Image 1 (cartoon, helix red, strand yellow):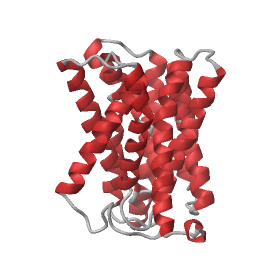
Image 2 (spheres, one colour):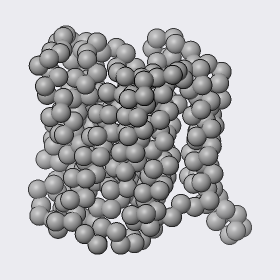
Image 3 (spheres, one colour):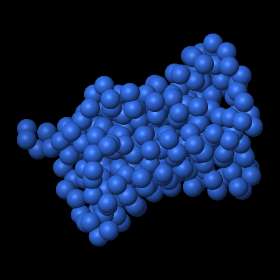
Length: 303
């Protein structure tokens, strides 16, 4: 187990590609609000259904494009353990997020879940010695302020159980990124596959209790959520997390709640408040700032 906590070299190749992959992942994730509104299913059934489809999609991709370090290859006990911990953390984040939405205000849930960069920052520093730079601390403060502005009008006094679950979701979300960074062999997409299998199994009883209405529209929405919103997003995130550190990945993922209401606006005409627009701008600035400031400073020194 000591190998899990040894310092790793944080000079990932293709850092720009990794940053872009996580940003594209956040765009895929951001469609969830719109499709959850359009899909009239029980929330846990939605989570389980999209994860089931995502798992099938990811298995199909692995079969069509086999890798040298595939899921079925034998790996060390430590790496297999890390893979399953990462997968269970992400599954827990998805499940607690859905349940929290049933117990407290949605704005509370998203705001508290996106404490994830802070938890990723602390856990990465503790477990894999990825010490945050000054730009990450600055971005964390900006993201926290932007989130408060973004959801100011929607914040309510929610049920304490729902708020606690939302915080747990944020901790698990941040932890999943750190454990994915800890994988030395194989790919972190294996962890994402595990997470979707665990989520689908958890939701299986809910399909019996709240059997969904099957129509062309609902099937199409579920397929999009499973393939694009979860499947493609999982592959993009697993690609990106091997190339940028856990803190930067969580900071970049925080553009998801900014884009979420924009999709709703485009389809339903629901207009975000002025404070939400300002908060979203702050969050986007924080992500761009933390991603580009060091390369820009390096370029300036060379001139």
